[in-house]
Length: 289
Image 1 (cartoon, rainbow, N blue to C red):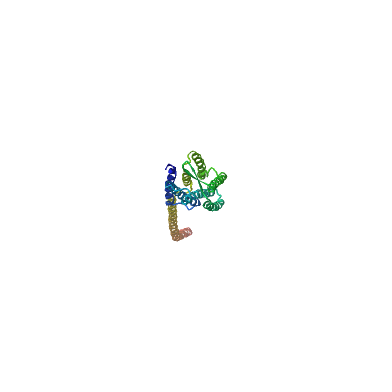
Image 2 (image 1 turned 90 degrees about the horizontal axis):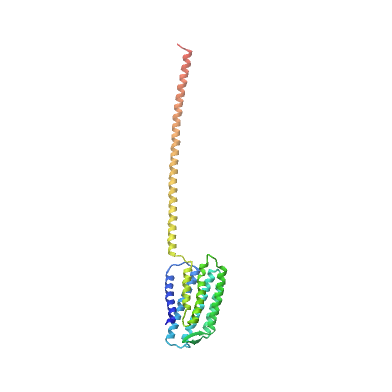
């Protein structure tokens, strides 16, 4: 049972992430689309691995059609997972044109895996798949890793190194798994490594919390509406003040006209009085008696 401990734990962690990822609102991006496919592929592949282990526990012969077909499905799971991960690296490194080639290769490879015979080698009570299908998976994995590393070295910068952590993790954990399985070949660690890489991809996705985005959007809308209301209030107040100023100006003009008339009449009256006094003064000088 210890042989399947890592696989079963991978199934549990994959199921948790699957539920969490698909139940949470997320951005509609190509990275999220590829990641969702990787997550689905991993979950299905691990379930097939567990089913294969159950067949072994039921003492089903390795030549049985069901057992052979199940192991072919496991190899297809490895091939599809590697292709989807290569798609993800192609996307984040701006080399998406290679993704179309990857997708064509995986279709051809899947057909080959189904058609080609699969043999098994018994070693210390272990049943190890062998044959051209297995070698093709090894070859495909090596080629994909070399291409992905080339893209990473070409595009990596100080500000985007975080995006390549899953690829770096796959390389590091891949070497560790090869070393461990040379000593303990009965341990099934590949699906466990896939689970670790999936979590690394999840935590390096540029996928902000949509709830926070929603709150910020609502706050922005509120502030914009408040600014509009403030401007409208200032406009109305300014318009009222201008109206009042116009009324005052109008009143001042009417007052000015009224007082100007009064001043004009008063000035004429004073002037006439002054002229009369001047005439009387001159008359008194001429006629003193």
